[in-house]
Amino acid sequence: MSGKVLFTVGDDKYPACFNFANNPFDLYATGYLQAGDILVEFVKAEGCHIDTLIYPIVFNYRQYLELRLKEIIMKGRELLEQEGRYPNHHHKIKDLWDTAKPIMRKIWEEAGEPEEFGLIDNIMVEFSDLDPQSDAFRFPEDKNGKAHLSGMKRIGPSHFQSIIHKVSNFLDGVSSEIGVYLENMSDLRMNQAYDFE
Image: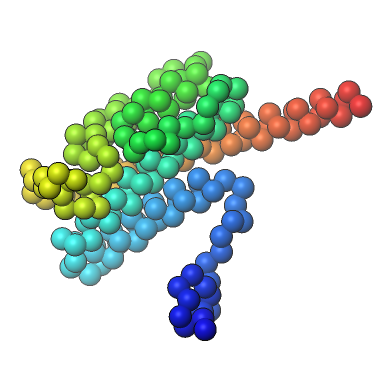
């Protein structure tokens, strides 16, 4: 029967596991980043398939950015004890960045403006202009039949990857630090609760 069921282990020696992480947003974001990296390394090594694989490469990296920003918004608001989670009714990456940025500024207000903000501002504008709804690299045309990416000619996958990694190094660090702050805050509350007993 397992040969007729899609979502099962089957004969796989190394099956994938689900629902084991404390932070599923990190798991998903990391997976999309790794998928983009694997595809870029493949086309660099093989020297072929770039004209078809560029779509999932860019989509994977964009999906990473969206998930990481949503996580930073959600966890940052939790840390700052603000209402709400993250905007889940759209995929507008520049709007997510514009929501995440003041949260980061508030958390690290004494540290000043990180130099990475300028780079991320620029690439969010590029993504917003080229792929505002996260569908330009998933479908060849929009819902009205208008072609996506009609002005695009060429993208260098290694260049694209290197820029994404400058951003991901920063955003992953932000995510990790917020996680540490939340853990410390939780420990502090637990200790205070014990003190009152």
